[in-house]
Length: 116
Image (tube, rainbow, N blue to C red):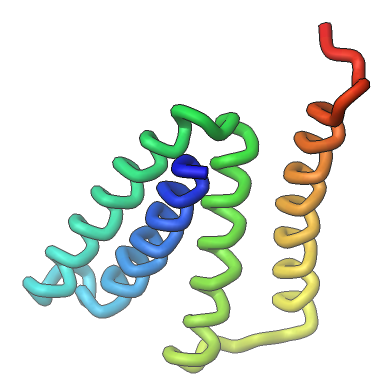
């Protein structure tokens, strides 16, 4: 369970770092620029801790997928980015992919399943 807690910290800090990237205005604003470095530094550190117990393929899919979806939603809600039908379909496909990866990992580890 510690691995998933570290993954949650990695996701939140990556979203924070990405949001600060927008505010940094091409790294011309000091505090948001430092926020980018801190956010991504903590994200990668937390992701590395997560990988002690969570498989790489699953952790990275969740980290990048959830981060992408939430960042896209923040872009729409906070920054007024355009949200189209194709944006919606893209988000649905990302979430679906993460769910499928998570489901396939659990199905293979089910009791009674054959593992070489």
